[in-house]
Length: 315
Image (cartoon, rainbow, N blue to C red; front, side, top):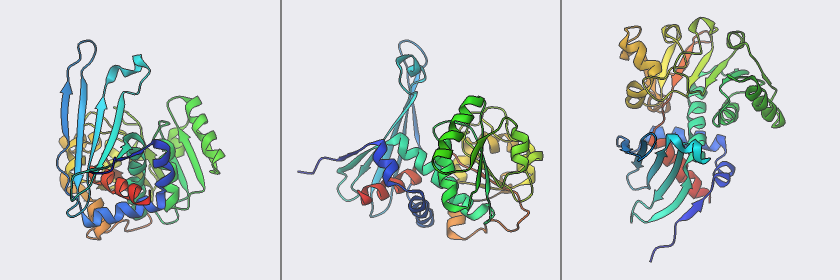
């Protein structure tokens, strides 16, 4: 009789998955590769209110573990005092299929998402990058700051949000962690002086203008995950050398690329590489101090599996 799976809560995930180790683990995972089928989307009609959605995101490694992230999206959950998106990760033994762990999916997702951005920045941001502008004040924002700080010598953090009080609140919490953090209401000026700009918003209209990006800047776009969402404008992709987390995901789901490709602003060939290429060294990262680099992620089940394996190994 197999042992009961371990239940791993959000606090344990956050405490166990430090960013230097997680970035290194993702680097190894992209270098080695994983089996990652297309994610499944299943609408769930609701008797009252908007329809819900069930998302299933499987991945496995040959001779290793099997994992699946189960995400429900119930748009009307706010009325019940619940988050709209709830995630759970199930890690299975690769030899027997027996459950090994049931993991808080929301914290696992924010940790691996931030680590993927940091992995990209480790190849694409200037080695001396010191000033980070974080655009957005949601749950992912502080994790992006911590992850980027794990791979680059950040000295100054500037926070912008649609609500000034939210930006000031996040800057205050980051300052308590030891970051030299402040809030701004002038996004254009902040970006013009940035070494790294990291965006984690639900914007449908671009917030970042390419004309603002200084030479040598690295742009990290994390928030948009559908073809209708955008965080940066056409000028940003025109000026930059473009990378993605996975070509298959980003070129189908990311409005920041889907829209300018459809409009003829850029072509699919202008996407220079993805995290597989960067991890394996088949495409060079930053090639000059003046180059503007651009990274767009939409997430992949490979990252979830690698993070879950590291977590259970440490526990």
